[in-house]
View (spheres, rainbow, N blue to C red):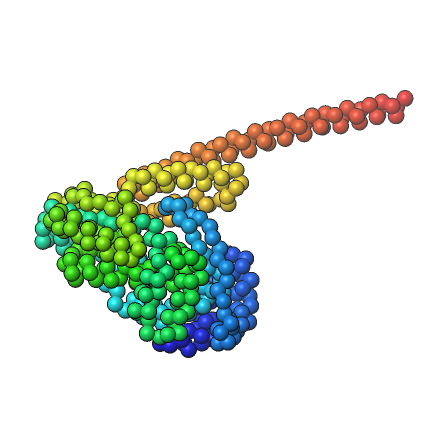
Length: 381
């Protein structure tokens, strides 16, 4: 693959089609896609003439599942970056990734990560039983802390095409400063995966950690020897320091019998060797509060009817990834009770409103009748 394929008109147009998927409710997307052929032609013309420049980013915050600073890319730039990734950068960057690098790749993601960790725990139980230790690592403000020179080095090491590498480097520079890449760009996510790729190979091949898995900046090492995991932690901290990164306070070593925690799931090894996935109670309580807030906004007219049900369906779909039959049943019952309560409240409010309107109407009718009677009396005189 070459840069020529990246700038091909059909590939750029296909990139736009993929970028618009599931976001056509946005006015800006509808407006840009309405002139898709013209905008794609202009983008290709600027790329071939060397006049293409990355537009300013949109910056905002999200608070689910935790507070994050998002740097969103404009649709025109996303169109180009999609073509860049699909027609060269993705295959070059991910070619040598390990199987246990699980985030932001085709065929991988949350489900792949959960299934992969389950397979690791089953294999571990066959070899060592239910005794052992877990080293859970988390990098402090990963995207915001990646030095630009480290990110560029990761690009040049894996991308042989100079034009594609230069465009990826320009994207890194577009975030400003000498540290931090935006969370929201497809290219940024690939670079973030590549920055820790050498560490992945070092842990698997040099430290000989057989049961290892990573989801972006969260990674887990499982080993029967606690002292060896302490040594591994020191080595990992040294390697991260070379990259200008460091572990945060959530990094710790704990017994495997407490359950392995990853992506807000807890994996428990039962005495029989069965692996049970449990959802955290904190997440269940948070969903209850969320459902009640949405129902309140539904019945005050701030949200459309059915928003709470959609939230419930989303929660149930996520919960179905684990052993959560009773949690799903309790959540459904809670929703039914809350909905019945608000429906009854709405019915009472409607009755009061109708009653007040009928009383007002009767008073008005009485006043009108009085005026008519007085008018007839005057006419008779």
